[in-house]
Image 1 (tube, rainbow, N blue to C red):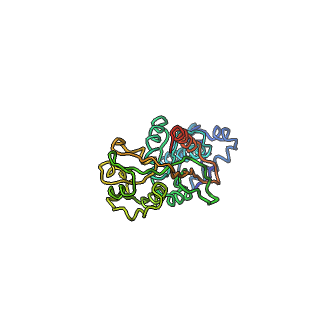
Image 2 (image 1 turned 180 degrees about the vertical axis):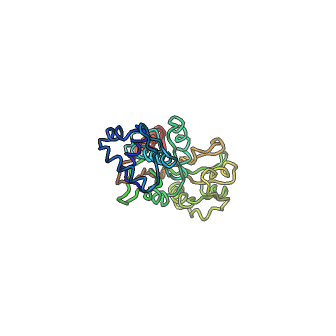
Image 3 (image 1 turned 90 degrees about the horizontal axis):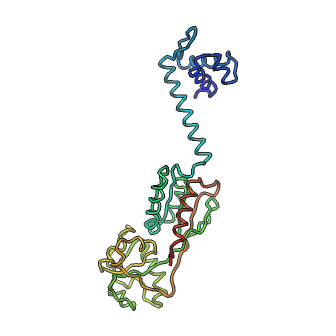
Length: 294
């Protein structure tokens, strides 16, 4: 690594073509500029051809000048990133549960179309992975169902999300026996969600294990496809159901005692969020609040 002052002297000399003018522009003596250039040449070989009224860069000198320009550009990019003045440019990483992710992904795309300087990275992940990725600084923002108690994370309420009992559009469901006839479409959190909701809808039921299994998928966008085809019922979060492309093929059973989870927006607590990440979060909050979650 060459001392920055040596490089500044060389750049000024290359641009002004004169040791005198270079020294004046930097507030240095001509001897100091000359010494900096000689020290660079001791390391890199001849950089200049000195003529009575001008200087000419050697190939090595031209390469060094390009290198100095790259350093200046990198310094400008770093300063802009640290200043965080532009809320509409740069990278924003967001990691969310799959159900919510299906719902907000079109909102993210619309926002990016309106702000083409942004690059939004979005990943679906369970709570544990979300916490790890935000703590590891791989993502600016995360959304989780359980409020973290790690002091390195700041958490604020983001939205509420209910669990829903979803059945084929034409299926009559009035009792536990009706669910047993339909059968259960499982997913990675299916049994836990079904147990939480169905214990309220059908108190005293013998448990989801007593319902025949009719299928399983680990792709949140596919959970409702077998339900829509009449193969069974499932229990999923509201946002996953709202994102389904064929709402007429399914039906949500009204429940008098809903199960509603709070979703938490998290980020590292030790430093402020970049302006661009704050703007994405505000945009999502605004659109989420416009809709009734329950």
